Length: 270
Image 1 (tube, helix red, strand yellow):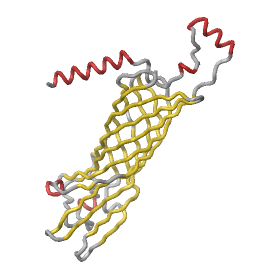
Image 2 (cartoon, one colour):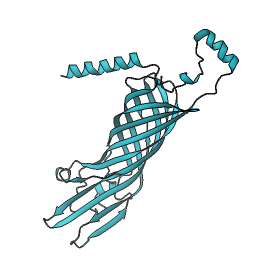
Image 3 (cartoon, rainbow, N blue to C red):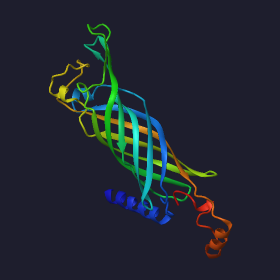
Image 4 (cartoon, rainbow, N blue to C red):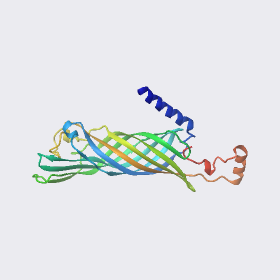
């Protein structure tokens, strides 16, 4: 089974190398928008079994992508994401408890993208990215009607979250180039899974010097990681070079029949 998987992967790589027409020939910049579906992963068995309510937060970013090899590129990306998690459960078979942690992150990502089978207009791709994030704000809320403290809302701080996040992101997508008058518009749609390696419990929580918000479902001696699913749309822009003069066109056409700077040859991926 494993041998077949390895052979299949090698076959896809070989086909990609043979069919790619210098698919990654131009650098470009762009903007990214999408949705993040975050959750918190607990190492503690009891906390792991709690129901995880769906959360949705925005992802917004800027990036610059450049060629490393004819089918491989790298990008520098600065993003904003909402991360965290939510859970709801019944305490002592009587009280409904709802807990939500929503944190605002600024992230630096370095995606490495492999364009699998491509031509100058279209290509599916795989990518992986190291992810470095910092929580600069957010909110933790708890509602538990009927209990002495029924409604709590506190801001994200050093006492209730580890602000640093280092993780990895991996996913797949498709890319389409649209040739406009003076620009090439690069459309990319992808989905990816993210995993944070760092425990998001703060040092104050692990040292038990901070009072927990969700006191009925809490164990800071375990670990809590940030994970999520992201679905994104990226719009890249590359300006087409100035059209060559008539005399230059005539000279170049004698040798190759097509000007190097002509509109038909100015795709960022070919």
